[in-house]
Image (cartoon, rainbow, N blue to C red; front, side, top):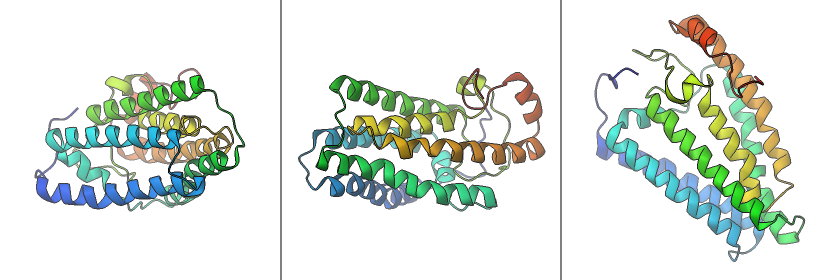
Length: 233
């Protein structure tokens, strides 16, 4: 990985303000999606999930604010230019809403009975997904939300990138698939599965750009065969 983090280090106080202006409203929206459909705040699964999420996000943001603020600045870019990426991002919003809102309705009306052991395993998987996300961010300082080739960017083939070409998508897929189980809902797994074809479409479009414009990416594809899941795809 290149040690160069960009032409100029971002102002940390400005970064803190920007992070709070993005993260706090987003966190409130997620909490509302979880608890409002449930019709009650007396829901253990909801608080366990929100508590774990807050600790994980706060820890990751604190680390990268101190170690790699340029990465956080890149991660706050939201405006996609490629039409396929715009479509996939727009299509993912109702999926995400369903993943977080449906468990509340499930809890309210008693549709599912998810064993405590499954909830615990699901929580461990969410933690593993965020651990992978953290490892990807450490390995690749150019991991932007927006699909683009940045100045000075080069192929990363260490850490998680030595196993699959898109480990960041692996982490997000794990988190979305198992979050419904932590929230005690079998039914919410169904919309979570709809996230997979959107990821596949994003990866195909992203790789078309990387193969064309990122030097060394074709050789990297020859070395690392699998995009998302070793032995499958």
